[in-house]
Length: 428
Image (cartoon, rainbow, N blue to C red; front, side, top):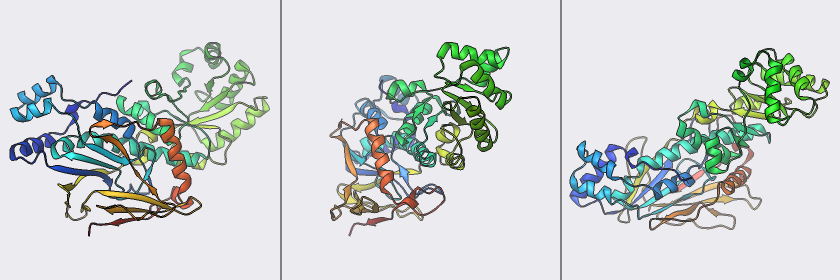
């Protein structure tokens, strides 16, 4: 299933620039735009690149329909020459960037868009919308995966965000290492494993808890998860095992002091002979809540609100800036928002053991290569054509390897410096 790219999500100011550039003859000047973050969100030591896989599909299909152009004419947003240009719009330039699943740091040239001024600037909102959302979700989710220490996490945040964002969030969380999603659209579109249990409403629907459990087991078998905290958790566990037997797959606890409840639930399950029945906990899970349960007998986590809101950082803070015109570096000099001119090339430097030590970014050139350097940019679009991209599964593995490569301090949940230093070599 392909995503649909509504061209009218373009901001009006972008069309204002296109109209003016078409009129003064600068629309076709050769330009380079870059996507980067000036800084990481407070407390973060790395960012995760997520969204290029979705974004390239959207750019491939990015068209202004007849209805779009008619609206822009009627609203007097564009003149006739701009309307004609939009009606014929196709991106014919090049896009390079960090692979999906790559880590990024302040100043990292995550994506480079090269082409005419007009064809590049009209993509700004689309590019930033996708990358700011998906990078934020994947970064927060990756921190949760680290905190879980190998225990699976289910993405359960669809009810806490926009319906389209929920699908993208399921994809980004899976990229970050989540085991599954409860969002069936994400499962259907991206091949992500799906899972889910019943809610408290199903228990309340029935005359009593055993009746609700018996109904669920009759429909789904013992390889299901029973929600045991609608009334009394201890009695809920007893009812669950009485109905399903000691080979019930799992119970879920969604409220209360999860640390204490997990311990008591494990002891009770074991006393009932359900030694293999797993314990799933959910309810306001973020990386910090997950970390506090590291020593408890929890087998799986369900995380929702924190995932789809980037766990406190709902945007990655990425910007899209013009850095080169007709081969000449251009810079913005505003206080606290200055840019480094020129198209960037980046490498990540590693020890022979594979540990990352530094990111080197060079403007209008290529960094000197050492034996263990790794070039970070790859081609996404060449002359307007999307090149074959890694699968979501391959990108997921790429991120796993990247997280292994950074120094262990970079995985801490506490605030600190970026996991590795970044050196930017400006244009001479």
